[in-house]
Length: 334
Image 1 (cartoon, rainbow, N blue to C red):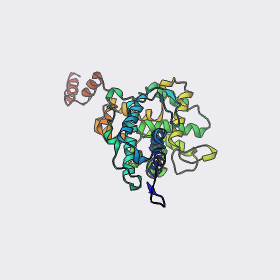
Image 2: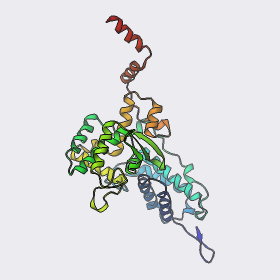
Image 3: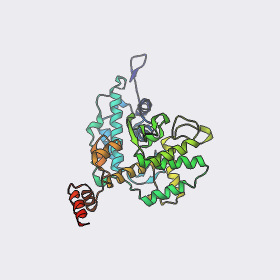
Image 4: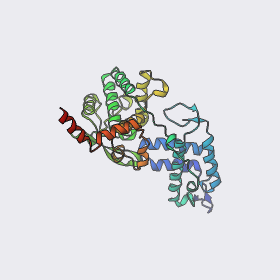
């Protein structure tokens, strides 16, 4: 709240504060993060946009939390997905909570907003259990169908870019914002690694196989001159980095060309999940998987673990110290 010439405070509305919050966050956060929280903030502003931020109460925030439980349309503010009937998932509601907590913390740092406390800290978050997690498994046959479909794309540059993306995403477990912001200067083809900047502006190294390196090299031969690895091919913005929305459209577009039913269509984040689930099934330890996924908490990584008893037995058989005895016994029998 600022002051008029007469000394009376000037009201700062929720709508104005939300716009300022997003503008401030966009200076440091990735485009993908801003795209996500913009939908949440628009939804909040639709309900309280004309209110002064200083008049918001705990009752208001509890009312909003209850409202999220009753929403009957999903993706109303999503830039890529059509609005459909359905309730919000617990993880989506939790993301709303976290975004609003960040919003209140941001206002608390600015005296002109006259916000006295973070009301969202007093609003219970939804309890999310493993059964609530919706992690799509990309079957190998589905993935290979995407590869074969991408090989039929034209012109050659479009095909090369699509194949590089379809190899890079599941090979590295990279997030969309990491792929979209990746620069050639941050890729070491000889060492087969890249430095990506992802969630909340945090950087990490990701690694890739020789087959992915070959796809990157093939794409580089045909790509427009650009500092960004994955860039637009359109004449209007050729060479500009792909946006998360653009990346989504490319991968979903390949799914549609492959005539996959809607429930089996693959999005970029599904390919990140693919890396995690297949790495887990190969017997990788949780700490290593956590590091390769760029997760801060092991609980997040644990969502991807779906090992059956049979699989655990196989992993045990491969790693037991007594395996040497079996080998020696087989040698003696020979």
